[in-house]
Image (cartoon, rainbow, N blue to C red; front, top):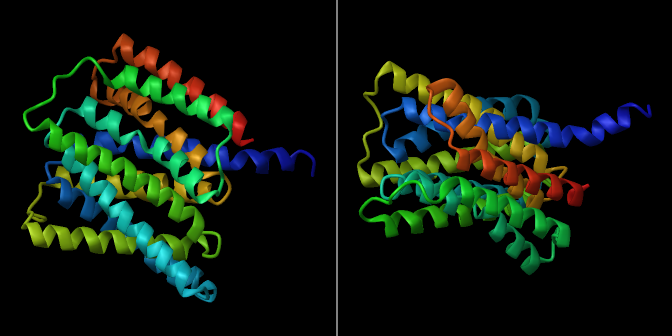
Length: 292
């Protein structure tokens, strides 16, 4: 019994680490896909929802007893998730990858500020130190190497909006899951996100069919690996860890994605990435000790 307790205490951190690895594969799948950003996001959430909703109906049916407020929180969280994907992926059409990644990884700052405003899971001084280190590492990785394209201001604003939406999503996801079981919550959030994205696809006339086999496989991989395993792992972790800590851990994604790009696609990893990655990991270690 004594040996099982440490394992149970460590499980949320292990799941969160696996989720970071799974989500970081999204960059690899995106490189293999030629779909438009909105279509990519819509298919990602649609495929994931087609798996989660039947599972929720089969195994979560007896637990579909909750207040209307809880369901509304899950639906609003799904709307924010849709906005996160739509703004961030679209930002890559207007600005450099470096600018986009840096700005979208400011989500921990917004989570911390929202935590201060709401008074829930208020981060302590050590968390702020860890967040600062992680943000510094992210800046080292993403700044200084790529020139922004024309129209970069719009792209930067979209990436920043994606960070704010992700921060709001993490906060609402934690609150909704205080009452809702995991599967019903995911079915509601992912389903709402998919619906919002398809409305955007139709409204903008974005092509959403006629892709190559490679693109369909990439979209499927993004939905299964990055969404079902990755983002669902994030949501499960939010049931056991503070949103502020989960948000800081997301800063490891650029580091992991760079490593995967080097291993799988042969993309070079610069000294800047290695140095910045070390600082990111140091920040996560500090934040982890704060969460514990």
